[in-house]
Amino acid sequence: MPIKKITRQSIGEQVFEQLKEQIFNNEWKRGEKIPSENDLAVSFGVSRITVRQALQKLTALGLIETRLGEGSFIRDAAPGINMNPLIPIAYLNENSLQEILEYRRALEGNVAELATEKASEDEVAKLEEAYKLMEQVKNELELFSKADLNFHLLLANMTKNSLIIQTFHIFNDVLNRAFSQIVNERGNSAGIYYHKLLLEAVKNRNSGDAKKIMQEHMEDLYNTFKSKA
Image (cartoon, rainbow, N blue to C red; front, side, top):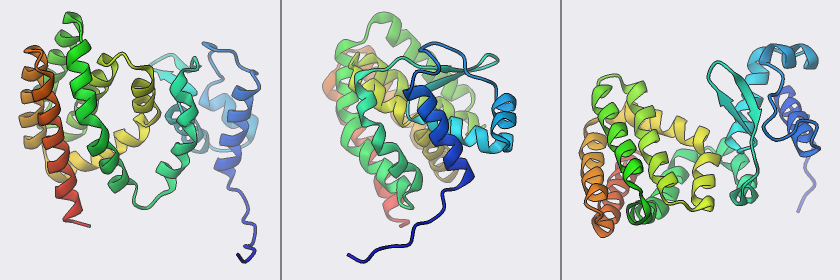
């Protein structure tokens, strides 16, 4: 294999790596609030945009969480954190949307099945609220895509399986972008149709139907975008 020239690391990547090292070295403890975007930008001597991009990557890795109006905090580690090396691939791969759809096609049917088997009544009620929100914002596609993603994240949480939950949270930022692209290209009709059926299957505790509906939903989604490739 021929030796390749070493490329200079971008400023954004340096900021990301330094922040990651701060976390790994326990400079900031679990649950601790990290400095604001402004403070970090001043400390690094870079723009807020550069810092924000680094924080988004840390969020996708599951290392921090951002709370609206409060700032960013160090997250507790969970078993699924070991899958974090997958994240740079999802960020850098030109075929990331197709890979995300393949990933969802392989996983989400089983997630729906397990969620239906394990869901509490309160969780089913939250899922119904999530679907009602999808209906309310169906004509505002950006809001609809976020509500769509939230529905799937709730299903993941309902499995009560830490690896599944962490996987979805690791990919949250990537999935958020993917859902936005999907909804903007496909509209809301398929989402409304399949999520209504999924909700009914969960409410009826019919895990087999939930799995079948989700698999059909993912297959339809995958084939739509595959035909555009």
